Length: 314
Image (cartoon, rainbow, N blue to C red; front, side, top):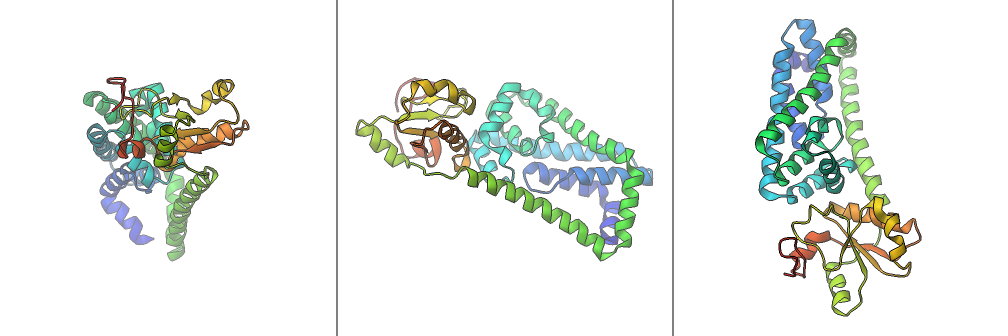
C-alpha cells in the first residue's frame, strides 16, 4: 500500500494520464476514482490542480481522437468491434446510435458520464462525418466537465480521502488487498451484467442462407430492420421494414400472429434484433427469429440488398 501511495505522489500525473487514456480506449480501468484521489493528494501537497486537469483532459482527447479517426475511416464496423470487447451491456451500437442521433454532437458533452458510451460515441462521431473541429471542441469541453467534476469532488473531500488512504496504509497488505478486491468486484460485476443481458436475449437464430432460401422459394417472412433508417449505408434486405422497440405496438395490426418474422441489426450477438424479437414475443408472436450475423453477414454472403444511393438491387 505504501508503494502505491509513493507512486501516486511521485508519478501522479503520469498515472492519471495513462489511466484516463486506457479507460477511454475501452479497457475496464476506472479512471474517475484515480482522478478523484489524485486531486485530494494534490490539495494536501499544495500542487497544481490545473496540471492534473490538463493531463487528464489530454489523455481523454487522445483516446477519443483515436476512435474518432477509426470511425471516420472504417465506419460503423469499428463500433461493432468496440461492442464485442466492451463489458457494458449498455454499449450496444443501436442504443448509442439512437442517443447520438437524437441529441447530435452535443452528446459529447456528457457521454463520459454514461457507461459504455464514451468510446462508441467518438467512433460514431467519426462514422457520421462530424466535423473534426466540432468534435475536438465539444469532446474537449465534455472531457473537462468530466475531469473537473472528479477534481472538484476530490478537492472538496480531500481530508476524508486522506484519512481513508491513511487508514489503508496502516492496514498494510490488508489495505492493498481491499483495493485489489474492489477492482476485482468491479470487473466481475461488469462481466456478470453482460452475461445476464446476453442470456436474457438467447433464442433461436436463422442463418442468412436459410433466409435467402425462403425468399428464393417464394415464402415471404416479415423482415424487420431494427437499425435507425439514416444508418443504412450498407443497404437493407429487400422488403424489410424499419421498426424499433418503441414502434412494435404500432406495427402489430399489420402482422398476422402466425407469420414468420425475421429481424436483423448491426450489433454483435444480434442484441438489438433479439430485444425487438422479445418485444414481439411479449405480444404473443412466437415465430420470430433474429438473423445470425445481422446485415453484415447478409452483405458478406453477396445476397441482394437495396441501397439508398440507387434504391435498387446489387
